[in-house]
Image (spheres, each protein chain N blue to C red):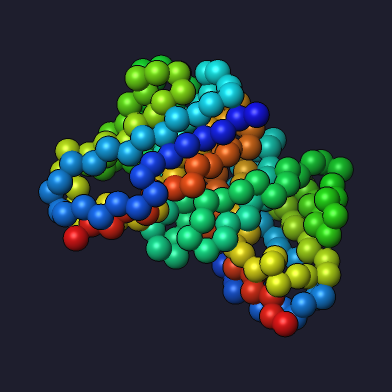
Length: 109
Length: 112
């Protein structure tokens, strides 16, 4: 089992849609969780951290389910500019951050 | 605020030539530093990380090496490049290993 797994997509959604990404992780001792966004041919950029109680930043909501070992990212009212690859990141053995392969999102007009 | 600089942005090298990519961080001291490679359409592969001057951990065997001659300087090198070394190389820093990492702009390396 991979340490961090994501559905690679692509997710093709119309503007204004709500889209959700899930990510599963294998290390039950993981304590740090993040979502990154990577635009085509650019570096990954931190989108948001994921806290145990769940957290929201504008149109973006992140949730953590420790029992099932998954985290999710919900994007409401999708914009064209949300088109990117979304990377799930979890700290693995030894505390190192493990990056998922990413889920590609394409928002269409 | 902290900034990370990575250069060059693009590099085209012949097979068998040497490589040196440099990364520097400003606005913080004793950062954790990382080198990643991302092949086209693939995920990030951690190559090296460093928790201090002269301390380098290698994640995968390869013909690349890394050095940290100063606290905020991280260098990725190779004596002889292979075709398979092509990719997008990213340097990153973090306050500690569990904190989020912040990436440089990346170097797109093409081997001919």
